[in-house]
Image 1 (cartoon, rainbow, N blue to C red):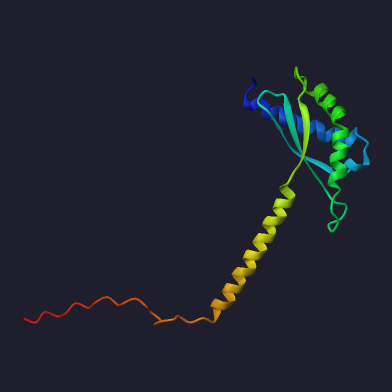
Image 2 (spheres, helix red, strand yellow; image 1 turned 120 degrees about the vertical axis):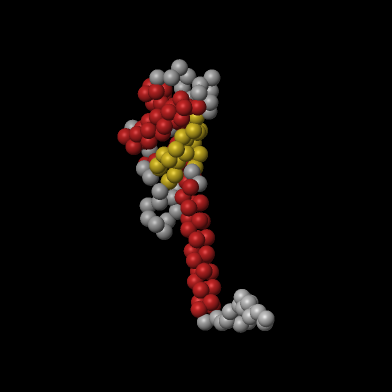
Length: 150
């Protein structure tokens, strides 16, 4: 059984190999906008999960996730052989491609932050003209010591 640092190192190397192969060697046009974001390797170095994202052509268009997934699955054998040739491990890990959800999550978080900023601005606008409900100074002043009558 391999140790965790070796699995992390192999995962990083697999990320580099797959990204380079997609850029230079695999000639599928559906993979032109695919970016490899990360890879995870199991502790026994038998299976690798490669995370990818697909960039859209323009900001207002949705990327072709289904086409990219089909293209990656069809190129899986070529990519696995490239990984085997360039890593030098005894057993080449099987590759599984998973779409990365980080871009969608970051958009969702940006939307939530925009909503929070709008709510904060609304509260600040309401508070700017507000007056206290009770006295201006709601705390009791400290008691003055009584003079001694002797």
